[in-house]
Image (tube, rainbow over all chains, first blue to last red; front, side, top):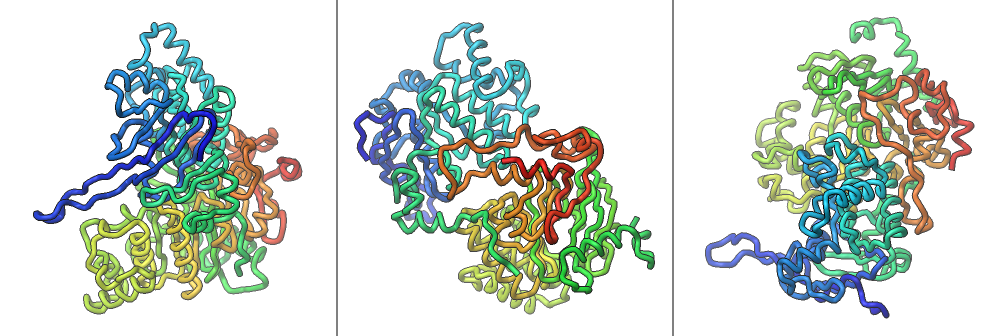
Amino acid sequence: MTSAAAPLLRLEAVSRHYRLPRESLLAPGPLVRAVDGVSLDVHAGRSLGIVGESGSGKSTLARLAMALERPTAGHVRFEGRDLHALSPAELRAARAQFQMVFQDPYGSLDPRRTVGWTVAEPLHGVHGASGAARQRRVDEVLDAVGLRAADAHKYPHEFSGGQRQRIAIARALITRPKLIVADEPVSALDVSVQAQVLNLMADLQRDFGVTYLFISHDLAVVRHVCDEVAVMRHGRVVEHGATDAVFAAPAHPYTRALLDAVPRPEPRRLA
Amino acid sequence: MGGLLQMSAPTAAERGAASLRRERSDGNASPPLLAVTDLRVGLRTPRGPADALRGISFSIDRGETVGLVGESGCGKSMTALALMGLLPDGARVAGSIRFDGRELVGLPDDAMCALRGDRLGMVFQEPMTALNPLHTVGRQIAESLRLHKRMDAAAARAEALRLLERVQLPDARARLDAYPHQLSGGQRQRVGIAIALACGPDLLIADEPTTALDVTVQREVLELIGELVREDRMALLLISHDLGVIAGNVARMLVMYGGTVVESGPTAEVFAHRAHPYTRGLFAARPRLDGPRGQRLATIPGRVPELADLPAGCPFADRCAIAADACRAAPPPAVAVGPGHDARCIRLDAARELA
């Protein structure tokens, strides 16, 4: 997978291993290779989907890309810079460029903070912007995700799941990031609301050129959103390519098994 | 209300159930295993009283598979809990649930306990919380056998092993003494199914049985449930938010919204000729593996209403593109749109024009 333009995010043979608690006094605990030698490029303005089942290493990969985890081996480069070679201050400044949206819009928003505070929070570590500029920016991002400026004064419990996920996306947008890492962003939402959030993410990409690293267990959702897809299993990428190609002609048996297992909305004739 | 329904002369509710039955069975006169008629459940919520179920009617024959599909808060789990007699304290129930000729609404607790786990089996969504973490798998399966079938410990253990083998749990003999945390999610759900099947129920209720599972495991578990239901000629009520799960596993389906059944019919019929604007919206909103890529998804504006906010008329009226004043005035009646296929909508002609 080479491309003329340098990738926005490059994972170079990245691994993350965890040592489990030892089961015997004499032997070290077993080693879990959560992510095991993964190399992927994410290009600006495009979407890369990561699919796989629970335990495949998708979420660990997301945390590595966000520099929330330090890789056991390999490098995570954002615009060419190795994120784990940066000083803490440099890393904090660089974080404005990549933001994350989590799966559970109930757990990822602080229930005791107003929406305005939560959405503005990423600005605290980044800009020395004035209060008024900050307020304008909060209004802008709330508008971009289809919420009202007045919603900034409300608390998360006053919103539905889909609206909370919009708030989480607004918070991710506030620093004008180039990359948004979204870990199962619509899995907790009802189908009718999921469609609204997926359309919103597509609009933001079109309007602001946002790049997505989109993690999901739902193959239909990934197919809808992503230009490219990587299939993970046991910490490794077993297949990677253009979404249409991978879904039309899966090369790896595991990809085929995943695709075959998706329940199709066509009824079987049952007695 | 239970007493009223036990009188010998058929009540209006019973006649209603009988006509529902005639609509879809081919002259088969035997009474259905389960007949739910105008079932209403009222709950106390922090925002005041709310109607969780607003008069639903359906029936299930012996050996029949029926699916219940809908989004969160539509009342599908509430329906399952009402059938199992497990509604929260303070819930008000009206209407009728006749199971094999017995009225379950108003049934005393001890009589309900005798049915539950014996004639009525249930598989829950989250096998980790449905199982007791402090007891071995074998003991949890044996519990209902000892209670309902009066088996001694040795016989119950032998039967538990047979059940674990039947649900195809690998290494079943060793797993009898395992605790739930030692099993994977799919294995735990197999144990949950073994518990539900232990006493050979007539009706198996599976509430989102595979939602917590990976897609490849989901397929195995659904195939297992399908096999067991066919082998034992059990009736199945499968509850899911996933149209794909419903499509592949049940012969007849009900679409719920806002505490009502808005559409019902044979699965193939409903998929081929979806009639209700909500059903049409639900189908259109779903990203597809085989559809065109890169297009916007159709959306249903607004959000699933909270129970306390449901309008007096059609529960979908506030999100419906073709709602008229009449829709908000009174709950719409069921309109036949095909063989055994009904929709509760007074604007079906306009709905056909929707994308």
